Length: 453
Ligand code: BGC
Image 1 (tube, rainbow, N blue to C red):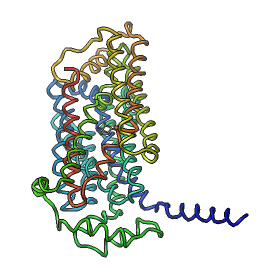
Image 2 (image 1 turned 45 degrees about the horizontal axis):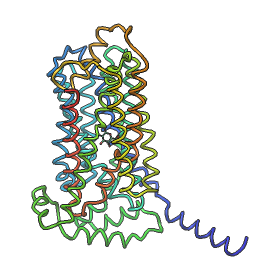
Image 3 (image 1 turned 180 degrees about the vertical axis):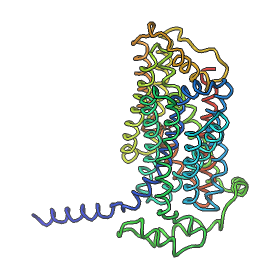
Image 4 (image 1 turned 180 degrees about the horizontal axis):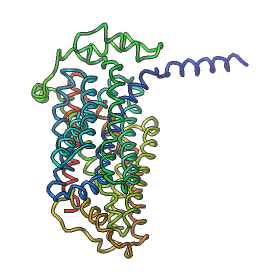
């Protein structure tokens, strides 16, 4: 081997050693991302589970509406206050509180004897979703190095879509089982307990510790989550400088008051909220919550609709994996731009295929969320005849929905979360992410309520 070959080998070995990721970072990211999984599972399970709940509990439209949207409203309200909780008590206890809510909420739903109890469970799960959707990206962002942050926060989005995928497959499997909804809603207890136990052993975010003045503890955590080649002292000093603007915890009011004088925080907040809101306006949850109903309306049988919607969830999952790769190769700006352009084109294709298919029967109800489930519920209850089912319509819709997901999943799906974990100044990151996550839930609520009206 020549000298230059040896030198090259040495350089590439030492570069890969420097880029080596400690096992603890992978473990803590994985455990934190269970929060994303539960977020995806508990929102994704709705369309399947409530078909059965409606039948077994003879729910009125209003009750179904309250039960379905209860989780979204409670997630929105919780996300608004999560920044303050995470700043006061720490990221780790906030995630633990989230998993506790997921666990208790799932248990309550699984054993619910009536709709009122079910509502308590749905609200508790909503609190879990609000806490997890704000704190998990924040925690992962603060514990990872800048070079890994994009990929690791995207991993959380992958966990969200994996949760949605698991939920849709389980709904397909459990739909014919007596009181299958109890299993669908209660099974989230298992990952919630795993996270609850696992997170007791995970460290607090070093940034939070520095803000609390716990410098030695922060350094110890940094040592445990960085590889031996990392400039720990340098990172520690950077965090200190960054946190020096604000000691202790920053209230939401304090943050809002600081905005007129801090143009960077102001612009970052505007961008973060806009991205999250636009992500929802692009209609992802219309697809995730109503895919089965849309396909059903296009002429599919019940079983075909449920399984086709699982296919859409699988496509979303697979193309989010592509996002993990692309976030390394392309700039955030370019990836987002390409993804948004493709989303616009695919939405046009979806509308054109609806037009082409002519008069798709829209159920004549008043509330968006109950309409879709109502239509499916009635079909399941009455075992409607499948004589008029066709394959062309559902396949056309499935293809156009898939194009939409292929466009959305690698870019517009994960990037609002990733970018939000990167752009806010350190001193107000928790509060800013709290607001941007709330705008995601607000957009989600708006779209969910207006679809099909
Ligand atoms: C969530 C989004 C998330 C997306 C991933 C949706 O259900 O509302 O915030 O990025 O799933 O596909």
